[in-house]
Image (tube, rainbow, N blue to C red; front, side, top):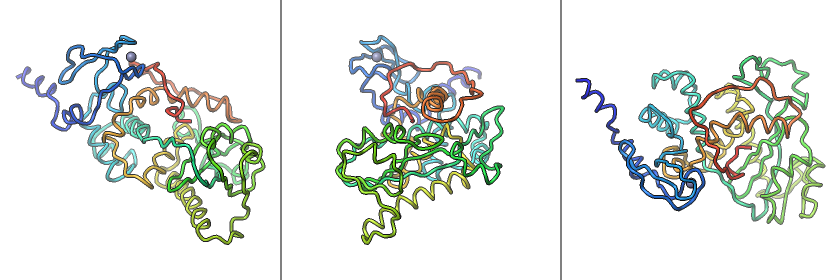
Length: 338
Ligand SMILES: [Zn+2]
């Protein structure tokens, strides 16, 4: 009897087997990205590989969102819910899947880390603006979340605002968390420099002198207020970017009941991606991202670096979570959340 139970536990479901045989593509070492590796025995129902360069062993799911998961099938159900219904409240998810709050929280962030990055260089006329969302430390132990309880005065206190730079290029809106506090030339340059290399027309929707410094060599048009422009196509685009940012703020405030600034970039990526593309977290595109586990476990470190180097805030009360492993493998700049 015991043996039979053990066997049924070890036997992968059809869905999981399909993920391993059809969805996951092993074409490089997840640690060092070398293309040279060989089959090095079996791990349960799948192959184990060894990299010729770094000598580490790995399986097809190493580094992906399903890495180190005990309840892989339940996670696949969770991913299906997100795919078809969007991000539900943690309470709803816990009830439906009978999982703990922290599990639902972790799984959500693994999926948010799986949103494909649109890392293109802008080629044509782009529209750019910025907006802000209240700085939040929601969920951080020992910190009272002040985002929704502060007095009206502190709302106008720049040091409490997370600043997001928003760029519309073609159909896609790319949002980047740039600082907490006043937005300066330094922050704008950090966020936009790489992408703006090939831009020949830059239109900025608000009056912010800092942009002039950043892109002084470009043809810049500062448009303020937007309404004076007699160009219906442009006005449509301007409306699109404004509406997207407004909707994002409402979604974060109302649907998500606020999001910690630590995770703001991830939620924004998801929101903007879903406006244009359908998001299938267990499709080929998302499930083959092998930086997900690494970014997920190192999130606190990225947040710390961001707060210390690019904001007016102090880094306080570190969140301490221990992971069995945390990859220390090479991440591309584009793979780091902010
Ligand atoms: Zn390797």
